[in-house]
Length: 67
Image 1 (cartoon, helix red, strand yellow):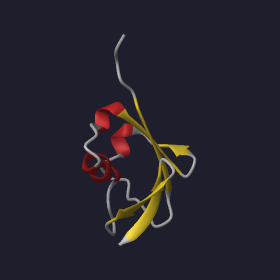
Image 2 (cartoon, helix red, strand yellow):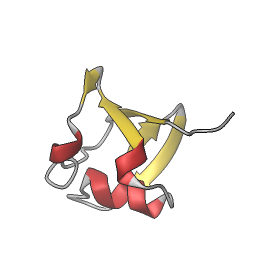
Image 3 (cartoon, one colour):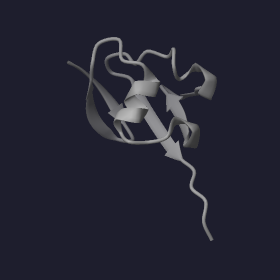
């Protein structure tokens, strides 16, 4: 297994894991998540092709509605 840092916590990932699969594995809806990897904001349309690499620093931000 490989490791990344996601929102400050170490996480294990499978080799060649796609960002969209990682997000779904956290039970999050990819349409409601903004992802930043190694300081670069990723386009949502690229989530299904972006591969996570060993040592990546990932920040996931979720937007929720309410009042």
